[in-house]
Image (cartoon, rainbow, N blue to C red):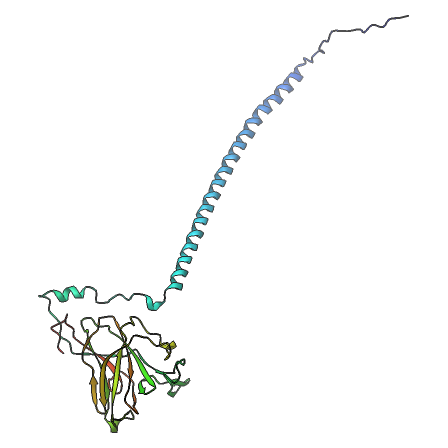
Length: 299
């Protein structure tokens, strides 16, 4: 019987190749690695810096764009609110006679002298109790033109027992703040205007002042049913053929709107006065006289 023994030997490294050509190759590889490694590390660092710089630029541009978009949206929103909530009629009209009131109060300031100024109505519209919801047409007369027919621009004062006329003026002249409402009527044989009532060729116009109207009246939607309330009977003005008839003077602030409703309460009253152009004949007008401020004016 044989016993087997595990034979152990001590490890010993193999003989190294000490030939010169092998040592030279190893040194060359090591040098190549040493040269390439810094280049790769430097390239990586350079790429990282460029990446961070580009990212910073992108973030900055994004922030600027977001701020610009936000500013535009806010401005647009404010503009929409402003235009939606305000009509052009509600905008304040600045006086073109700035600080003239201070000059007029100076005793040594030379005062100008002016005759009265004629101010035509912006428009004259009719309303009727027989059609309380109807907006009556204004320019119904037509004439031939090169392109067809065109409405004739006239101012027509029409008053009877169911129809009244709405007038509105704008006082634009500084210092001319004593006003009177006047109507000029041609002689009977020179006009087709109609003036008749129970007093024959004479009528009495009731002048209703509307001081609550402080801005331009929208005549395009005006009817008997929605006409302004709060009228004050200011004057009763007799009129006839062949003369100018005007109310007593009343104070009218510069840049203010002066609005009136003209009616006739006499039985069988019928007034139809028509005028065109800038002359006072045949239409009502506002006569502007000098005010207390311009006491050197000539009436």
